[in-house]
Length: 393
Image (cartoon, rainbow, N blue to C red; front, top):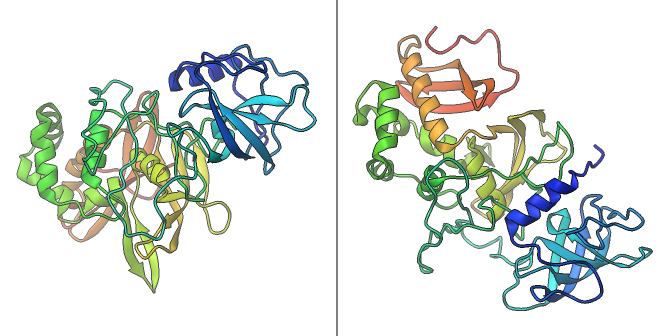
């Protein structure tokens, strides 16, 4: 699929959200710039600007995917723009968006974090919670938790999630626009409820005790009240519904710790926030090629997943999916509603039904599965089985 660049205004807005630009092109670095020594491996045909503030690009130079360029400057510590030397360009020194490739830094200020820094992928699965932060309608999160907190959740720039993982998994999200069927949309924006749910999920493969869910509901009484109103029942019924069949962990957190015929299997993972966190921490990424089944029908993204297994090896799930824009609060309400509707029509054992979702003007369908009066799974489906009944009908 050919690369399509965003308009200059969108590029400036993205860079502005990530931090003050404050740097024009030219031979002299601005005061906020950070000198580095490293390489930058391009992964998209991004424009190479003489000045990203002014949008000047003499010769309309673009990066060549797969090419390794010399990198010598960032626009600021942890900056979104990296300065390269591009052979054949006049002038050679050009600014490119950092997300257009992979930056490896050999010499730098201590304030700069290269893309390759991270935990050894063979180490045990720790609660390696990544950097997340809030922007949106939900209540904002406190800027930083204490540094010794094992599940620190700290905002980065505009509050969205950007990968800093050393893993080689292809990304779920980036800010490179590849058109309406772009398989890697911009990273999601998370609010307070999203962050709290990710805290409950913990590390990759961690169990989620129902006591944590009860404490979560107690800490968010307004949310608890609205979800119970959706259920038209009590809190005990709500907790049992979500945890008797591990539906909460399956849907929100993913289950990378089960084996099937000697192979690691990823159960669930249908929440955009966990996808972003998995990218950030190098837990999982998009499966490109192979058995991957890809259906891009925004806001529904269906594609294969490659993931880190508990023993450090790599597992594969050929088809999986999430709905971009469906927050943790949205999922809690939609699944609880589907559960309430299905209880009156689906019999004992394992049964499935279709549930209509309307989120920010986007209407689509999701598949809801329950077993013995408990939630099993819930996932969006761009091409649902029309023979499957609707929940409650």
